[in-house]
Amino acid sequence: MEDEDMKKRNIMVALLCSMCLAVSSPIPAMADGTKVVTLGADLTQDQKNTMMNYFKADSSQVQVITVTNQDERNLLGNYVPSEQIGTRTLSCAYVKPTQSGGIKVRTANLNYVTCNMIATALSTAGVTNCEVVAACPYEVSGTGALTGVMKAYESASGQELDSTKKDLAAKEVVVTGDVAQQVGQDNATNIINQAKLQIIGDNIQNADEIYNIVNNIAVQNGVTLTQDELDTIVSLLQQIAQQNYDIQEMKKTLEDIQQNLEDSKNGTSSDDSSDDDAVDEGEDITQNVDSGALGDDVKQTSTEDANLAKDTGADTNQTENTDSYDNSGTDNIPDASEDGTTENGTTEETPNESEDGTTDGSTEEIPPATGDGTDESTDNTKDALNTDDLSEEAKIKFDQAKQFCKGEYEGDLGALQSVVEGVTEPPVTLDQDVAQKLSQKVLETYLKVLKDGGTSYVPDGTEVYLSQELNMLNKELKTIFSTETDPAEDDILYSTDKEVRQKMYDDTLSFFVKLYGEDTQETQPAETAEDTAEAQAASEDTSYDATAEDGSYTEEYAE
Image (cartoon, rainbow, N blue to C red; front, side, top):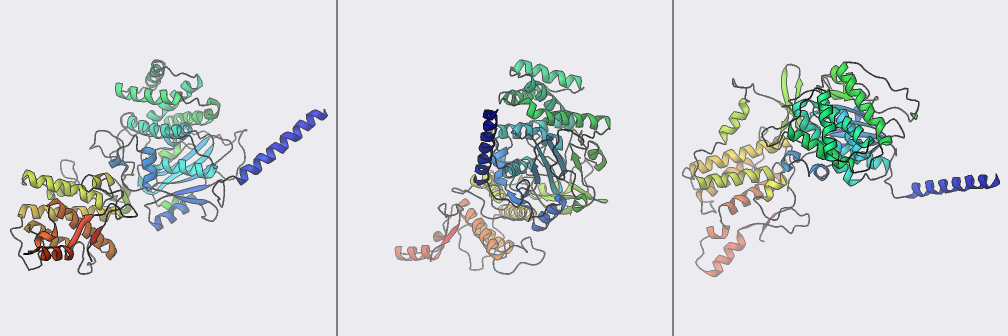
């Protein structure tokens, strides 16, 4: 008996020592070690305040961290094209790890990713118990929300999730979303979630067996999957099956999701708040939100209330979500950069979107659609940039200019790198509405120059380039970027700092100088080598400096 008491005391001492070591380990200090808020890096301060109000979270009581576009790329880059990830991160998350109860999720203003999609993906990432609220101040697709949720969970729990499982979770969201385009969000989630329960529970790893399970589940639910969809789901589930998950740890969450999907289908609601195994850990953050902080018509979903989606107009069985994804590409994955629309009363509005599908949170009225169902503003934009009348050489130049504008102003690094050497990051950051309008303005101006050929340009003695097109364009760029006068209130760059305007002008001019193969010293007539050297020293050095300390490219001017 004494030996048993001694063993118990030794165990208690060991546990206390372990607790002390855990406390002293290098886990980030937090105001509240169980709650973390992540805010999209590209939200305005007012929008960030709105999200904190919605979460009912006090920055002095929770840790607040930022999720960047690079964070999204790190998680989603293997499965979502760069142009669809875009350049801005907007979704936010509020996460509290718990000791029991499974994974509970609430979403707001996410019109593509549902609570059940996030919950089942988190189970794949290795999360067992936690409460999650994923939201945005206005309606977006929300495919980037998982990034913030997992980053918040790691910070709040003080432990890093397995990288392979996180990768599979990201893939699961993309696969579920892709299948959902054809069969609806609930049906797609149901098939994958139900198959996970059976495959992990019975330790099934054989591809043929998994195929039969998925196909049978689809048939039982009256869902028809294409061969490609079946193959994609099977491939995902086979990878998941190889990770040796503990079904007992996942069971609570997966079964709750199944019940939620059934409730949604039947129009009923289950109340499992009386779970005997649940540990009282304070107020459930998924239940304690201020929906009014986000305004009217907030679309919400909740794993704890299947009817919330219907009550708030979130259609989780939609099979076409044209407001939240770009269907112009080869796949139907919505922009992870969070494209979406909102409605305000009788006036249809949408967050201002860049070419890569990102938004800045402001709204503008959408012109009415044309008689054939197309957007009149889209047609006008295309007409304004129609290059059918250009020569092949001019078309090539214009296409390169489009890539430059998309990269320089809209922040698409891949586009910028395709036309400018040595660039490691976008040089400036603009609101996406401003960026898109600036790209349009510069391209319209350049197109006019190309069509004109410089014939209408009247020299005024300030010319420094051999090409009249380049001289004509330079004069127009000075006006667009307001380099010599302050911009008028209705100018695109009215609210942009003078230094940023000058930087963009310098970069833009340098790009076009290189596009035309000119060096400014060629424009200064020099009869002697000495004159040539002096002319070169006095001219602009428009080369890109790839060795800048911050990795960006700059223009240097000889002193």
